[in-house]
Length: 132
Image 1: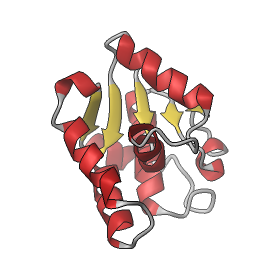
Image 2 (image 1 turned 90 degrees about the vertical axis):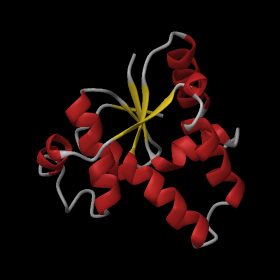
Image 3 (image 1 turned 60 degrees about the horizontal axis):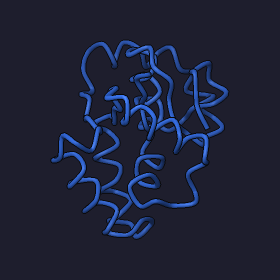
Image 4 (image 1 turned 45 degrees about the horizontal axis):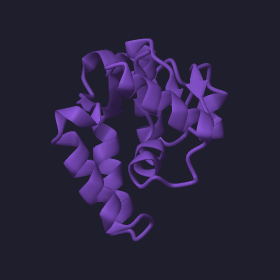
């Protein structure tokens, strides 16, 4: 199954953090084991940098993200924020998901017709198929 990871899910996966639910971890590991695509929106890379700069996540998270994205065997693939994703943003209400990076990540999942791995309750209730 193709998956989309939100920013925190990707970071927690790469750091092997207990913050990532076992259901989410199993879904990611299963997809990678089967050679299926596990996408990370380009906005998540930007957000990861922002979180590190603000001291909200350790620098090690960005190092692991960079290493994983540079290693085809990691199974993680960056997907662009393109016109199709931009068109899908309007399908996610600004009132239910006010944070633009989250809306872009959700729109990526809608555009790719893939479940989103996220703990974010706003995204979970926005009509997007989610795994947590």
